[in-house]
Image 1 (cartoon, one colour):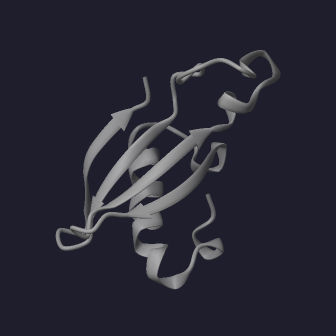
Image 2: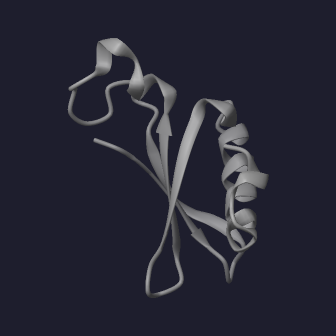
Length: 87
């Protein structure tokens, strides 16, 4: 998850996501991200941990490594407001 690889309008969201991963004692380099913006302005960062792509996890439904999650970022508050781990 390199901030500079995202479009300029998404970089603050990615910066906050990187900050949150570090607070959670995670290495942001171990994650892949996709960003979705809802109609209400909340930005959802879908985070896939590299363990989800391990050969032993191919075809496994859910969150086999237990580290994939979504961050809900509120640009008005400039913070992550919710963290949901995938089931």
